[in-house]
Length: 312
Image (tube, rainbow, N blue to C red):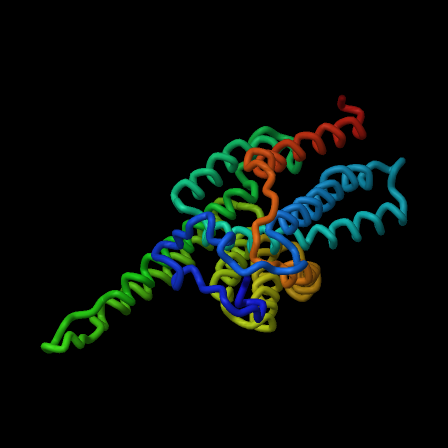
């Protein structure tokens, strides 16, 4: 059960074990919870939201550009589907933090993300750019991978800083080595900034907003619900606005980009299913199915879009 949602009894990653190394059967030792939403259900909700969003972005957008399909109703359907799609990424970020807290091996977890980032890149580029490789856009697995690396570096620096003590008397009392501790704190912050720069430089999906949202979920995991919503909302709005300003500053005004970026705020509705999370994994789909759905559905939607365009 998640303390972050005012449910007592759940400890943070740092409290439960060093380097975020939980055992996978932790959830089995928790008191039974009636009702609520399992992690498996959250994952399905996120996948459905993502599929709806990508269907609009890949298929409906192609139809809108073709005069014989364009209509006011199609524009409306497209807009609604993109707004529903905003729910997907915040839930995936939340599940990423849960996955880190329950994994036995963070390196293996990161390696799996890297593997599927590579596997998904060609389907992603075909779906959104219609080329096999586009240097200007990388899939969301790279964003999630960078987020994991940032959290691992942050946790390592924080634990090293907290563990620096030097005995000064016979009773074992000690003082914190302040200079080294400050250096480690700065290193932890630098890891977050480097992660943001990496996401922006590599043009990963959601850019640095995605990395910051992952970090926000991690840092507010033990906070109250209003704090979590406020942190996520600020990151979604100002992170998206900042990325759009850097990319489109020569084409649009800052005020227009701010209004355009506000659509990401619909992602806060993701907290409705998240707040119902009961701390249990539920019946899990095979990892290959969950991870493999991403590249497979992109290829499928690309094929449908090509059929609509008459290229297949």
